[in-house]
Every structure is written in structure tokens, then in C-alpha cells.
Length: 116
Image (tube, rainbow, N blue to C red; front, side, top):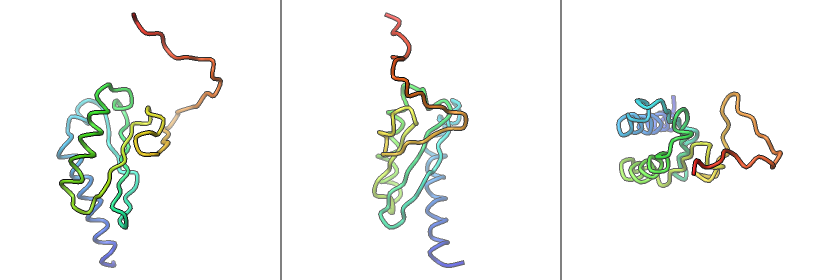
């Protein structure tokens, strides 16, 4: 095994440990955080929040916390892209999909009505 592969695996493990250690409430509330990609050359990491995070009102705050803390705690990481899939990809330019998810481009449905 090359040194580069060992270092890369170590970086991925440190990112995973960071998520487990800093955000146990994600799992406790039925959410998940998955590493989508790590670009070791640029130091950018893509994180996808799923499960209960996809509709959670505080997921934007969770994303901001991940973005600010990870670059401080892991020196090799320069930028974090994170999203829930509910933000249209704005959380990092990603357009993730989840198993069973469908896209309706009909355009007529404005979504649920506000309760007020």
C-alpha cells in the first residue's frame, strides 16, 4: 500500500471521526452524515446530510457548524461543501438523490400551503 493511499485513508477516517464526535445529535435524531468526496489536492470535502436532516429546520445551522469547525480541526481541509438534498444543490453545488426519490418537472404544484 502506498503512502499516499494510507494518508488518504487517514484523512477520510479523520473526517468521519470528526462527524461522529462533533455531531452525535444527527444520529440521535434519525439523521445521517456521509462523506461524498474528498479532494486531497484542493482540500475540499463534500458532505451529504440525509435521513431526518433532509426536512429538518435546523439543518442549515448544522451545515454551518460542520463547515466552520471542520476546517479549524482538520488542517488538510480547506473548504467544506455540505447539503441535505432539500436545498436544490445550493449547499455545495451537488445535486444528490436518495433511493426512491423522484423528480416531477410539471411546474404546476406550488407545494403545501402555509398553515396561516
